[in-house]
Length: 119
Image 1: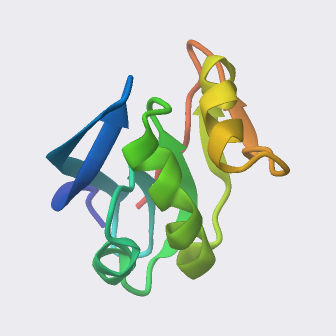
Image 2: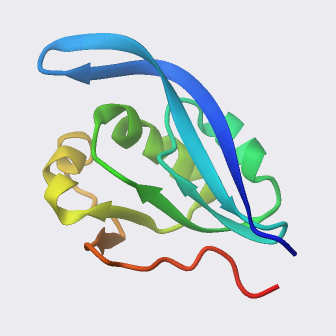
């Protein structure tokens, strides 16, 4: 089974410093036919879950804590229920949306995340 990288474009809003803009986001799904990870889910949890399909979702990876990712990850987690990874420096942004919940894993520089098992 070969590893593949899929891109799904979702649309919604991004807010920062009092402004809000319409944006498109690249959501990345990396894996094979059996399992995958999702990178930066944004805006449309159902479309992302449909793109994952029946594969085992090993992790939800947030590359940064902008609100378009943080606000959307909760809905996606409800559908997919995989560990959420976020760098510790962005946890304050996470807590502005989810004050009583911690991400599952604090990403550190140099971490390696297994995407899919051997073929």
